[in-house]
Structure formats: C-alpha cells, structure tokens
Image (cartoon, rainbow, N blue to C red; front, side, top):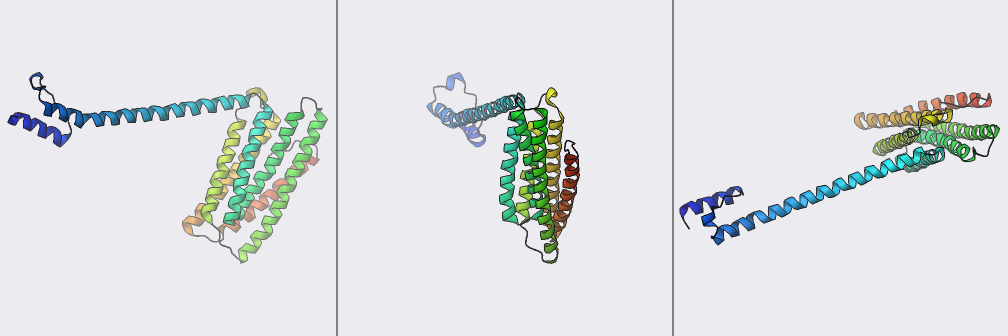
Length: 274
C-alpha cells in the first residue's frame, strides 16, 4: 500500500470520517473492509434511532387522538361529565386520605374534607342529571337541597374536628412529614384541574346554573390545595414547625363560615353557590 493510502486510512481511523475512494482503488479489499466495518454499525444505529423516534411520535399521536375522542364523548352528556368529575374527585380524595395518614397534616386534612364536601354536592348534581328526564323541577330541587345539606354537614364536622386538633397541636406540636404534605397538595391541585377541565368540555348550551356552581366548587378546592402546597414549602424551606396547625386552624374557620353561608342560602330556598 502506498504512503498516500496509508495516510487516508489513518485519518479516517482518527476522526471516523467517510473517505472518498477513487474508482481505481476500489479493488483494494482493505479499504472496502474498513468502509463497511467502520460505517455500517453507525448506519444501523441511526436507523434504530429514527425507528424509535417514529414509534414514540406514533404513541403521542394516538394518545392525543384518544384524549380528544374522550373529551368529545364527555361533551355529549351532562351525566358523563358529572360522572367523570365524581370519579376524579373520589380518586383524588382517596389518595389524599392515604397521604393525610402518612403525613399527619391537618392542612391536608382540611383540603380533603373540603373536597369530600364538594364531592357530595357533585354526586347530587349527577343524580339530578340522571333523573331529570322523568323528574319534576320540585324533585330536582329537593335532591339538590338534601345533597347540599349533606355536604354542609360534612364540612362542619370536619372543620370542628380540625379546630380542636389544631388548638391542641399549637401547644403540643407533632412531627409533620412535610414532603408527603407537598405531594398531597400537588396531587390534589392536579385532580382539581382535571375536574375543571372536564367541566369545561360542556357545550355553551349546557352552561347552566348547576354547571357554574360546580365550577366554583372545583375552583375553591384548587385554592385549598394551593394553600397546602405553600404551607408545605414554607415548612420545608424555613423549618417552621407550627405552620401546619396555624394554616389548618384558619382553613377550618373558613369552612365553618362557608357552611353557615351555604346553609342560610339553601334553607332560604336559594340555589347554594360558592
């Protein structure tokens, strides 16, 4: 092999670059062997990368289409929308209950109780949607009224329990697992956003009073979750021991006041709203 050929092969070995092979040298087996052994694996690797990207893109497209189809399916019926919101709320509440037990947080418990109260009201709206075809307006109002009372009662019971526990913890602090509280607040807020997004799939003609009420329910649930997240971040960042009790005490007072306001409206014959 000439010195010129050796230099070309050496440069290719050093930099992994494809070299130009003149036609008069194509008979050289060493050069051909170098080309195939050097470049065929990289070509195969490139093909594998392209196939992987195509597969992942196809999965994303299928997921997007499935989500669009599901939302379109929800938009066709009040029963489907309210049923999906109830399912989202119950799953979120179950996860939060587990995290309340793991963390010992009263603030997260307040968020969970408020979500449970609103879930009761949402179930009432689902029942009304199920029976609305055959029921009279008086029956619809009665169903909403009793489910509203049940939600308010749950709100009060939870709030009074939290008040007593928070007062005790102000003098006898307990160890709170704030990372679990943070996770619970984030998951709760995410669940609220999912429920709100489901409600937003309603066509304009279905934006009635019930729809507006449920939107406000979910919005207040989301605000509770934001408060929980902020309190957990403050506790983690600045090691503030009593912040959970302080926040939960004020959340419980808000829940008691909210329950009284709603009770007065429902008892007075008004649609309850917050």
